[in-house]
Amino acid sequence: MPTAKLTKRAVDALPPPKTKHVIHWDTEVKRFGLRIMASGIKTFVVQYRTAEGVKRRMNLGRFGVLTVENARDLAKLKLAEVIVGEDPADKVRQVRKGMTVSEMCDWYLGEARAGNILGRKNVPIKSSSLDMDESRIRTHIIPLLGNRIAKHLTIAIVEQMQTDVKNGRTAKPRTGGRGGKATGGPGVAGRCVGTLQAILGHAKHKGLLETHPTLGAKKLAGKKRTRRLSSAEIEMLGKAMAYAEASGENPVALGVLRTLLLTGYRRQEAQAMHRSWLHADRGYVAFPDTKGGAQIRAIGPAAIRVLEGHTEIADNLHLFPSAVGNGPYTAVSDCLKRACALAGVKGVTPHTLRHTFGSVAGDLGFSELTIRAMLGHASQNVTQDYVHIDEALKLAVERTSNRIEELLKRGAAMVHQMAA
Image 1 (tube, helix red, strand yellow):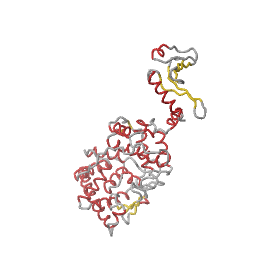
Image 2 (cartoon, rainbow, N blue to C red):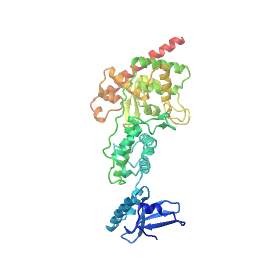
Image 3 (cartoon, one colour):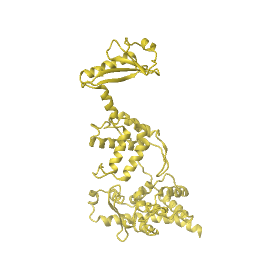
Image 4 (cartoon, rainbow, N blue to C red):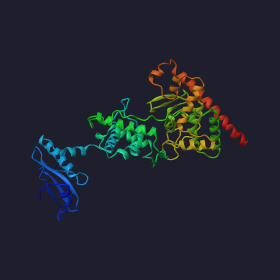
């Protein structure tokens, strides 16, 4: 193998070999050299033996990216590591073996769906929550950080991801589910940070990470949703729904929509209700699972009339059955958009209907504590503040439901008068 002091001028002048490659060794630093491929690529290398006597040759970097002086200094550092018994090449391999963010996300989803990762209440994480986690992972986290080594993440890297999501860098059309476009924004960006932080925390707990690398990263506050329907808007929506019904709109979709307005239930809760969960004679629905766990939720006569007014489909357990298969109807958001377009009401989501129910209860004078219980936010401590919690909630829910039904009927009456 040729030897000479490596300088920029000397390296520039070295021609590519006719064979596969050749290494020119430096005379100033022993075991530091330059490998030249037949293609002309020139790479600095360092060669050494480990404490066990194993011969290693390690790439330092390409000529042009590294200067000769930089490469020589780097070689000295690597050889110094060898003197104290370390193996520089093995350290690089171990770094490369570290799980990437993408791999760690896949590990988390697999373990969590198997029930092996517990959430905040020390119970397995809900499937619906994991679906949202996976959506954020696939849409935002992996495209931005997937190839990075998880243990080398920093607070700055995670907060930059948050900024990129907020600014719409990962915005794209959704390919399924609820449709629309994943546009980012501060709320989504903050939730992405929360998801990633939780994954890293679980990985540390399970021994995949020695430390949580980004503990302390700050999340953006999402925009608080305060939109509610006014009394006039509820009337207009009642008119629109009556017109839509007369025009052939899906009665199941309208049934879910009316139920949301008359109960304040979450969209997923209303759509998924089974017939067996409804106890109409006692005025409640027994949900086996909600965002807050299993709950008994009061329901007023106005909403019960809506639920009992739908035809059952054989072999389908749901109060609002899908026309295809044995599952529930799930497209109420589309029906709401059509109804709001007819009514000329803007900025309404299923959550707006839930917020409206709570706001109407507030208009009627019910306390914040009662309203939280009506909406299923109440903790055990909240319910213990009532001696007759069932009757108190039933009264509050019935009065609120009746008030909203009254406004819907006023709107519907306009359509009926026009048709008469």
